[in-house]
Image (cartoon, rainbow, N blue to C red; front, side, top):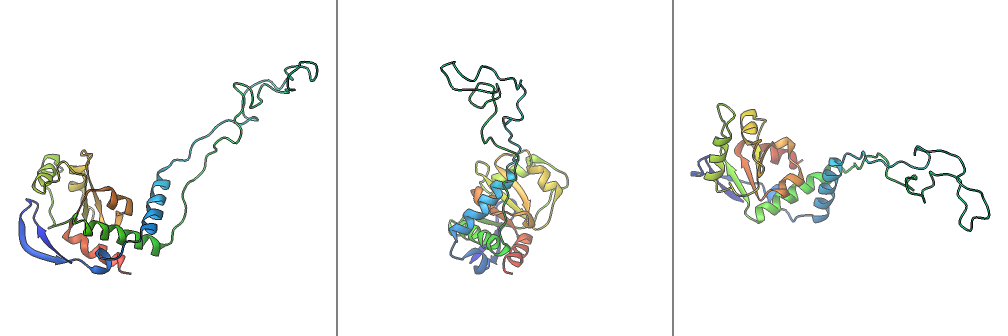
Length: 209
């Protein structure tokens, strides 16, 4: 599919680029997308939750009442999970929520995400640009020129660009990543995907393997 190239002022440069059908026009695999997004979110979990079990609760081990004759159930410790302040039964323990996915599935998931965005006409191709110094106001002007100031957007750079990244860091609705840092979650989480020209070759090369 052909997409026109815009400059950072939002004007048509008169040029068009051909997006690879093998990356931007496949039949999306929803299950692959689900698994890749699930893995991404699982990796964000710290897994540091912890509840004290019976053996870890501070307290006396003295038998709190006699075995028989009380008319209630026998009890041998104040740390019994049935009592207030006692241990937790099968409580959460620190763990890792990460799980493994093979490279081909993750590649398919990213291609599916790109194809979904292309089908929705939510992909913008922008010629490469740079700022002399980090400047949030300049980045906001780019967003306004592209009519994205009130939309969640993801800018994909061909290579890391510190000035552009720092210029966008204070904006909640917009984020900047390099083409090698792309994830299926990031692609789908944005309303609009802004691909700089230099990123297209890297994306298509990585996903066409």
